[in-house]
Image (tube, rainbow, N blue to C red):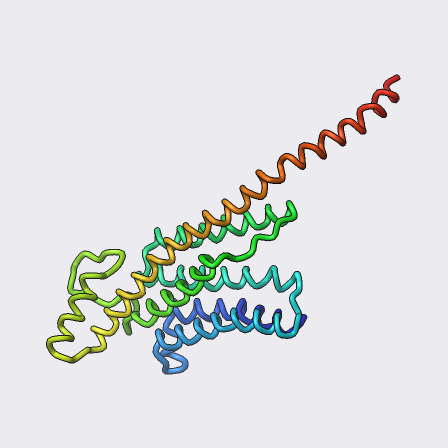
Length: 246
């Protein structure tokens, strides 16, 4: 156990605390702190540890197999727990969260298969962008939560995935009056969070495609060499098998 792995484990232990804060009123009842403020603070601290453990591992040259296993697991637990809590609070659509979490399961399985074949799939730039977009989207949506829980009430009865009409409506009203109420601020945060969530969904699908294409290219290029090895093995085994049969 070294410092980077300890930081990674801390991120895993923070996940249940984040879920309790986002799904219950414990922050107001016990600490007198707003649910959204404490929730976003815990989430951002946990997200910061993702950068910190990698920095410590590189700085101290303490990259270990345990850390390579725990780090992506901690990331997936944190983002999945936060997104599911947002679905329960009606701040994120369930279908989008299913795509994002399903992508994580698919990429994890692909990396396991690749590791079995001796291939290390490194995170792509799109994958890193996706992680950053997830942090921004979750933070914005948590901050948009009302005091009673749930999304802010927009001027439109039928919500859309990206609350663009509400966003434009609030900005137009602000340009006229120069005043932005707390409700208006929540609507802006909610609209921006839903817009960034679009980017998360698109980057999730695109990065997953990149990972699968990388694995497919590796398998296709290694197929001829495997065939030659298999043929050589059969040729080496066949004479001895024949002698035994005689």
